[in-house]
Length: 132
Image 1 (cartoon, one colour):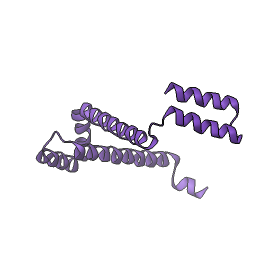
Image 2: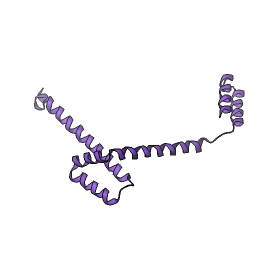
Image 3: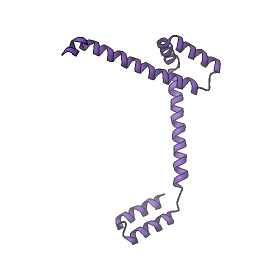
Image 4: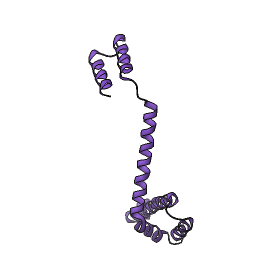
């Protein structure tokens, strides 16, 4: 009971709100810096000006950047995601390779002969191989 009287509930809530607000600001700051360093459409001088602005006026600088560059940030993030997806798709295609349907059916037949798969599974694999 002594601890509860020394640190009232409202002070605990206030401390939590301040902590989470600070955490969110740090997260936004990292997002802004990451976007700023990834940009290819601005010069180094403009990047330095943004960094100085964000450091000298932390909250205002971050919010002004978000307001001024919100559309560009979303477009750049979308392009990065599309590039990462295309790269992953290309990697999967290169690793998977395109096997000949006759080879796939032969492999499925070998599995059927060993008793590893049933006739229904063989038929399904055969249909997939012939479908492409």
